[in-house]
Structures are given as C-alpha cells and as structure tokens.
Length: 269
Image (cartoon, rainbow, N blue to C red; front, side, top):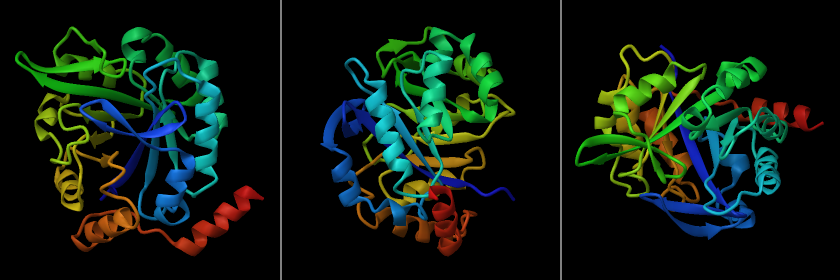
C-alpha cells in the first residue's frame, strides 16, 4: 500500500505569512514569527512536505520570495514545493535553485498552457504541481485563478480534466468555500475529478483539526491532505496531529530522526 502524506501550506504576501479565510488574507507574522512559533527542525518530522505559495495581491517581489523559500530550506529537512506567479522557465529555474523541490502552478494552465510542456521537458513532470481553486456557486462548482480573481468559464469537471491532462505530476485541489474555516474538507469537490485519476491528489481547504486530516486520508481518492491553518496547528499541533493519525491506523511514513539529521548535515556540508 502506498503511503499517504500530510502537507503544511504557507501563504506568503510581501514579506509576511498570512492566514486566509475564503481567500481574504490576514497578516500573521514574518519569517522570525514563523521560526518562533514553528520549530521547523522538529515539525519537519510531523509533515511530509511543505508548500509555500506567493499569494501577493500587489506586485510580486520574486527575489524576496525566493529568499524566504531558501531560508525555510535551511530550517528543516523536508521537501518544499513553491509557486505563485510563475510565467517563465527562468522563474521556475530560479525558484528551484533557491531550494524548492517542485514548482506549483495555478493560473498558468489558463494563461499560458503551452509553457507547461516546456517546463516538464526542462525539469520533469514530477516537478510540477498543478493547483486548482474551486468554489460552489448557484450554477455549480467553478474554478478560479489569479488568487480567486478570475473565473474559468468552463464546468469544474471539464477544467480538472484539462489540467490533469497536462504534463504535471500532482493536483492540489483547494476549496475556496472552506478555506480557513476549519470546518473540514469539501468532499463534494472530489466528485468532479476525472475517473480514473491519472495523477496523485492533494486535498486542501478546510482542515482545522486532526480529525479533518483523518477524514481526508480515509478517502481512497485522496493521496495527501494539506492545511494552511497557522493558528490551529501552532506549537506542537502538527506533531500531535501526526501521532494521532498514525495511532488511528493511517498509513503515513515514519521518519528516522537521527538518520534525517545526519543527511541534513551532509547536505549542508
């Protein structure tokens, strides 16, 4: 049986990390705040991946964002996916050189889908995470891009098929309605996925406690669960959540801390 994953998502805007609720952002703190409240050398053993997204509402500073990504790679030995506003091969290359293991694209499949095969050829499709933000309206579920500012004028199921048919390695499916609410995942979103699903699925939007993560991992269509809730999992929250998931029988990787620290020292050296 393939192991499932728990992912922590960080939202970045202009030098600060943000809390999002239905895509409305609230400033929480800078990198120093994050380091104070999340011991990444420890929680790296509580999550399987870290996703860092530049959701800046004003003009993006790519260099500053890459600096934050690099700083996070130095804090803990955990794979990092990063994205936000990627529009060229060079942007992607610089982000990967800053320490990211994968890139995340959200608006690109709509804005310039022809670039994605180029990125896949350059870095490998396994290096690309496609992200889709979706919400329910009177007419049904819709996909949105540009930080929730542009609606895709196609049914969600059709858009998801289009996205997963691109040369990407994973799909990050995020509920805008549940975003930051702590009310649990919107499993109705999964009914719009292609069948069979050709790539792994990361489910996001709504997780506010350990049980929500467990509910997501229990769904056979879900390969990984993500949460971006900074306050609900602060301190030892992620560590306790993972321990509870493993105790509940969820098939998660169990990390050898001493071996991981040795590897980190080797790479830093």
